[in-house]
Length: 203
Image (cartoon, rainbow, N blue to C red):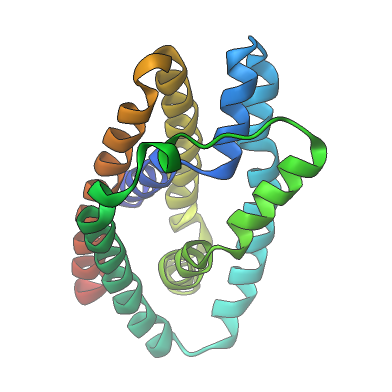
C-alpha cells in the first residue's frame, strides 16, 4: 500500500503541472470535445511511458543494486531541489507564460509529447525515481512494485484530467488557477522528495 500511495502522490504532482499536451487538451475542452481532450492527455503519454518503463527495466537489471540504491538518494535530492527552485521562481512567471495554449493537430500533439520526452524531468523520474523502485522487484519480486506504477498512472492521469477540467471551468480565472496548481504540485513534490529520501535510507 505504501508503494501505491507513493505512486499516486508522485503521479498527481506530475499531472497537476501544466504541460504542452494539457494546453492542447484545453483548446479541445473549450469547444466541447472532451473525448479528444482525454485522448490528448492520455494516449501519447501511455505509449511513451510504456517505452520508458521497458527501457528502465532493462537499465536497472544491468547495474549493481548498490549503485541503484545510491541513485535513489539522487532522485529524492533532485525532487526536493526542483520543487524548491520552482517554489522560489513561481512568482516570477508572467500570466502570459502560464496561459499559453496551442491548437489540436497531429503534428502539434507529437511535438508536445516530444517536448515532454526531451524534458530533463522525465529522464530524472524514470532513472532516479522509478528505476530504484523497479530494482526492488529484483529482490522482492516484480509483483511487489506493480502498485507503484498503477498508483502513478492513476495519480498522473486523474490529476491531469482534473486540472484540465478545473482550469476550463474557471476560464476567466484560469491564469491564477494554473499558478495555484503549480504551487500545489511543487509542494507535493517537495514532500515526496523527503519521503523518497527516507525510503532510500531505510530501504
